[in-house]
Image 1 (cartoon, rainbow, N blue to C red):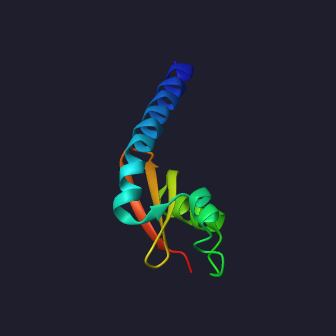
Image 2 (cartoon, rainbow, N blue to C red):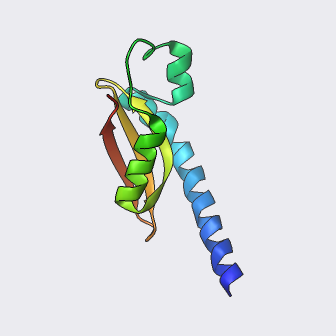
Length: 99
């Protein structure tokens, strides 16, 4: 029974990641948000001191009790936009200052 529950949760998480990744390109175009790879290639934030993405991710996961599945950097700001799946299955978006 335990293995079945773990499998179901893993399957649900994979489905959510696939769903969110299919939504993300249109969201980036509308909200001036980029992945870290895109921002690095464009050199957009090269001269700006940003908070560590790893520390922001840990802080958000600790405060929400969920798992970060999407992490974007957006302007103006810059700000980080994180999509989190909580333990109860709810999906929330958290915005944090990047500086």
